[in-house]
Length: 305
Image 1: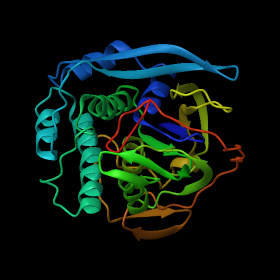
Image 2 (image 1 turned 90 degrees about the horizontal axis):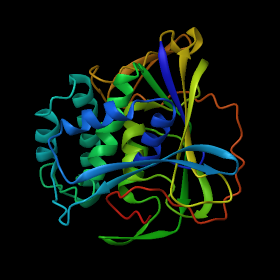
Image 3 (image 1 turned 180 degrees about the vertical axis):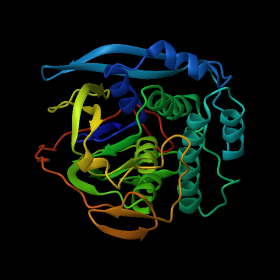
């Protein structure tokens, strides 16, 4: 079974995840053709080589070329994605991600799903990141996604809702509701953006799988830091150890059920979300974090670039 593992030692944003997949060999022309099926104008993708600390990879930016930024609610986003000519699996996975993000926003702001307006999340850059990610996963034939624990910073950030603590409430809601393992970093910075959190908490399981890596990609963020500011993805064949009895069924057309059992290593247990698994991490997270951190993504609560 073909799988992908995202090593998010420096955090995760939608742009970084998408850039890593392109760097690993995803077809940019196919990606842009798929995104054109959304029927939206006023956007472009800028992709360029990038390098930090002797490592080369890909930097992706989504360019919003419109002067206005419509506030799209979940119903409108469902219409845009549902009426596109995208493959069914891509539509379903993308809508799963946006629905979970809407649930997080509604819970934080004390409103209903229909009343949540996504503002920047509904802007074209977040649509491109989310739909683009799901499209590439299907085009590459990836059947399961895995991810490392996600680092979270401290402090506050300025948003359209005022000064908010980090991680911002929507991000924390997404991570906590999915049982995502997090690792604290002593740094005043937003390391995981809401779109990055929505993608991974919806579609990935948080453990390091046994696999045979065949492709590796590096997706860079904007700021140059004392460590490589990037996400790296390993794509390859999962071994029987990582796939026997533990096939991840959230991906692309399989549906996303928040209350279903999984079997792990001879025991069966039910839980509220498919990401609360035993975590097999045999690598250190020994990055010195005393630096400013930044990702190239504009998400609902503040993303300077």
